[in-house]
Image (cartoon, rainbow, N blue to C red; front, side):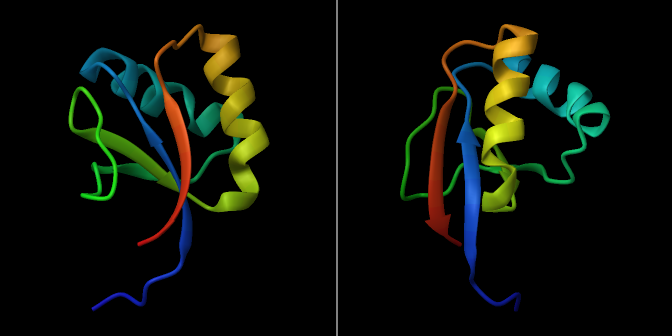
Amino acid sequence: MRPRSLQLVIAFDTTAAALAFEAAAPAAGLAGRLIPVPTAITAGCGLAWRDDPASRDAASALLAREGIAGASLYELVI
């Protein structure tokens, strides 16, 4: 089992938003991946992006640049 650690989790309202973020993330230098939404939070589509908490500013900038609305950022131990 993978050890639990603090992670940045971005929950999306729609699957289209999650997939758009996933497609744009590598060019922005983000190395995370899509995961099922953790049970500690609720999201409309059931998909979330998990990444290192240090990437929060880059992820926020990407959301704004791509015009992805309705995303919520959390820091969770998962």
